[in-house]
Length: 125
Length: 147
Ligand SMILES: Nc1ncnc2c1ncn2[C@@H]1O[C@H](COP(=O)(O)OP(=O)(O)OP(=O)(O)O)[C@@H](O)[C@H]1O
Ligand SMILES: [Mg+2]
Image (cartoon, rainbow over all chains, first blue to last red; front, side):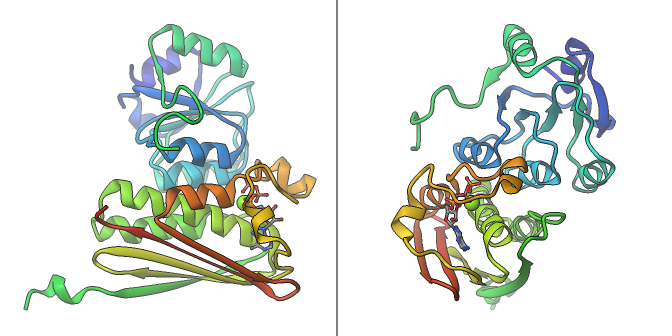
């Protein structure tokens, strides 16, 4: 599915990168701790969607260093102005939905979006 | 002689300020950009970037300040980080997954899972961590370009 599909499905607001709504997203994962994001991305998360409640600029730097496709903030938390500026500068799309983490993941999964990794310890660990 | 053969090795250094969370991650972002420009394979760039990010965060979270040196060779990439700070009294314990001394403030930012050093170990081909209490910590790691 595309970022635009995800936006519609979750009634999300596009906070940055609206020109990228056509971007194809095939994998996603959810994490709030940045070391968890990096540990998952270790196995490859190029172009993936990160679903998170982490509202720090570091989540955007993290997304940059591991080449994520977009970040989706849940529970109606709005990124701050410096976060939006940073996202525009490093060109990572930001979306925001009011759905809670569980609902967000469930709805995306139901529509066929796959997880980046299924279990800890599978693959290269 | 082709110009490309003379490119390597080269190095860059970056200063990291302890406690400065506003730009925490920016050094890793720059390192990634440099490696992208050199057109290293994505998997190599990803591995170096992940380890660099964890290392940068540790200096910001725990040390006073540090210098990160990126050394780029044609067949491997090395990163060395030297900081001045409290140091680590038990390096083996620090390497254990889940061990963390992160403050509540650091945890609120999404750090402090105690996964950083073990992430670095897993994602690199070689890693060395040494420390002197009340002086500082030296971390270096290496990622091979062809493995
Ligand atoms: N540069 C450093 N100077 C002093 N202490 C350090 C340094 N790096 C790591 N440590 C110590 O080692 C512990 C483990 O570090 P590690 O990076 O594995 O986990 P963390 O930083 O606590 O959490 P995470 O990296 O998952 O966010 C830290 O909590 C800290 O006590
Ligand atoms: Mg750490």
